[in-house]
Length: 558
Image 1: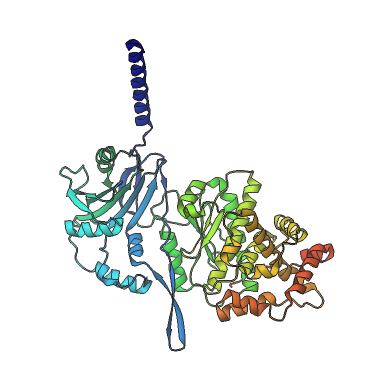
Image 2 (image 1 turned 30 degrees about the vertical axis):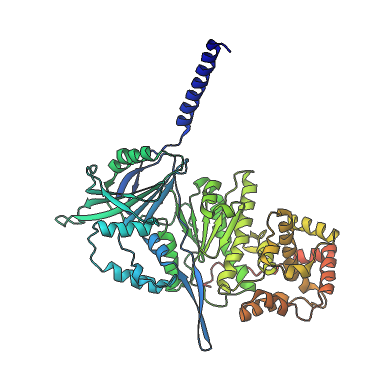
């Protein structure tokens, strides 16, 4: 090979490497703070990442404990104290398109770790410990700040350093070395008192930036120092920023029920959770509170849902009245985009269209971004109605867990419900009918197997088709028992669902309740009668006309 050819090859390779290096550098994500925002309730103005979105945090997880003393037993909702405390300090979170995250908090109260010897505590004991800690005089020196930052960030350690030249409008800045890919800054601003001549107060805040792993750490620090910190300034504090959205508020049912202090407190807590979220709003009915960042173009769907959701609740209560007073508002959170939904529920639930999370006590709905407005409306309603049953039965039966055939069967039963001229009705679901007919034809509609399925068997992993057939069979059993069995002569299956509800409340065991509900019933004969019903146009027609729900009286105080 000639030396000239070698030089050409080497030159070409170097040129290619240079182009690749430049292209890689240009494509490498960066951290920028270019968009100015205000948090009136916090009294702050600052910049965030461009094209970033407000991202809510999930409510603290609830752990149900059962205590006993002699023959007396009672349940208590317990929480992780550190999570409750972190939530109380939190002001807001923003995530940009490059997955960089900015978390803002107000440093108000130290975390009294020594007060919590157990992993979980009741809300009452937590509030008492925090109140005692809040009464202590804290100077917020370096040691105090390190303890606070370590607890809030979850980092193993936090090495503090004073920024020598704080930017304008900021009294003091402390930087922290935290976990790799995480930047921390505590900053103090001076704020004049509310009245003329009032003493100036100093308030501490904390900004935590979690970086995309591909972001250059040193460049990110420079962006914080040159763009974020200089943008911070104090503005007038407006205490009551969160109000119910007038655009979405439904007045047909709101305020008709007398509520317990516990219920009102839970509703206020939910509304307050979006205080610093500019694009989020809430709206209420008697039993529900809606949280959403959906825009006004969805107003028709949201307002219709607000009007209809109480008809649905009344239908739940008609056949399964609460066994004890429900002292918590039912939360429905609807996201404007699928990306936001997935980021909130996590990768393990990204396949879902919506879910009821009993550990966080929220019903969360994913928007669909395909199809026309009618398709979107029907899908949205069916998803909400399905999950709303899971939510209701959780509260109405004091968190006793029903068997899957009963729980998912009823959720599917109510899913296609309609409200027309104040009349609530449930008809057949065409998709479930199609699947059921295929199962009966293939001799796979095994009711005995369905009644005793474990979670793993019902929600079978990596087999969407079989899982969907389990839903369809559970729906068909509940539909038959609710609307068809009572019309037969004699109505030998008419009381199965009522017996199940009674047994579930008495035993708290979904499997035992199934045995009690079907006691004395030959499941082979039941299977035969079930198949006969679904093959009989006459019987199905009578069931369709059998509107089992009473009219809802919107003027009544329930």
